[in-house]
Length: 166
Image (cartoon, rainbow, N blue to C red; front, side, top):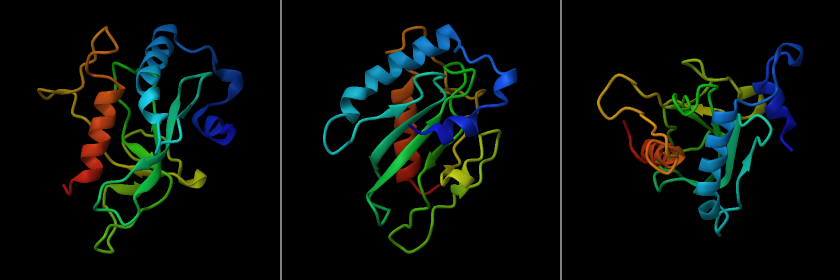
């Protein structure tokens, strides 16, 4: 499933070591297991993730805040190779969603920046959110995946970004 996404995020297979980084893979597996129960309960429809390379996670029917006309989307998070030391760069929605006032959120750019993969040809719209790693309160994961910063922290940031007008 979702082979097109795997192909987009991969480089030339002849030049790629397809074995995932053990520590990175273990961390992503643990964090996905941590959130899976919540997103497997109605109204959610479970989660999908790249269980081979641990490159991405999709949460279908993710709830959009009240400022959007539609209330559900598909949310895609792409994990960087340096995760968890480095957080994902922005996130993706399955299309451009209109706000209640008829406008569109300026952070939902479609085309990706800051080194995030550009997935517009696959129908994903990039939402620009970056973290300044040098500021107090910046992303600082601990050895225990249950402690911040982790996927829950990132999903809280996603909710905050989608809820607020910056």
